[in-house]
Length: 402
Image: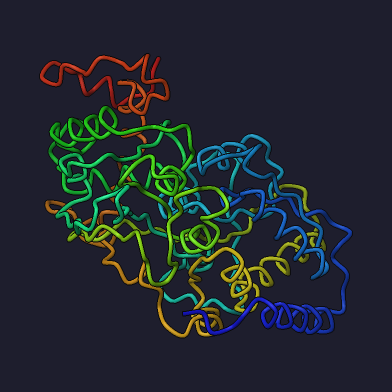
């Protein structure tokens, strides 16, 4: 699948750094570029800091022990007003950013030299695609799972009737959690519904998913599936292959077979799955000098370039938006990125794609789940199931206290 190895990409990175430095003839390391992102695991933050340093930049990026999730990243950037770069997020957040939703955040006009290499994944003149992501539903096929039975669903929500145990997340917030919710709610989109544009049946189904699922204390669903504690689970695409590679490090009953699965498989879901793209943009930071802005632009040019994105993809098993990076690293598209993308389907009764529909209603969905107590972490303190026929959705779609 991958046609180059890390050592080759490392050489490319060194060459690109050298050519970058010689072309610019400048040292940008004197200015610390402040970055906000939700793509900030400790591994990613450390890698980027080191790679940026090698390329002649100094950056400041909090990892997810400090800022976790797209909501936290946006809020921190808006409150602190010290950001130079923001990357990651998804189309919902980027539409808000580009359209000036946040009082203290303005995306600077900018067109990188590689803009044409990211295809449709761009907000022209503002932000440009880095990584394509989706969410996946996996299951074990061995004796700890379905024992050879193949799982095929019409919709993601059919998991509640699958007859097997499944992992579910333990909190409302977080990018991956939100994308899983978007996938679960897709078949229940109803523009006429006062319940955030989702039918009441959809909210009942999501409650069933919470109530009868198993929360193991893990942030994501790979680990409990890998340990054999559940039979079906969810995970995000960019780390799947790497996690399977190292599965035996954390389990006595690991998932086996990265590219040719031996005891696991993807659930075949007719609808497909929910995709997002992560983007890169430059913030118009008040008080930044022209020379400092030049450093920020140079960093953005470097980070989004084909060579850097190919190295990022190789390190973190992500799939770049940059087609030149894809050509560098993959000889064929990984199977997990050939799944149908229902985020781009038009919602019946609207002129919006489902991704746009999610953006339109996401705050209402968060309020509904928070107000009703979805995704409790402690099963001994699980809330009572709502009286679905007697709910005031006009209140539930608002943040508590409003």
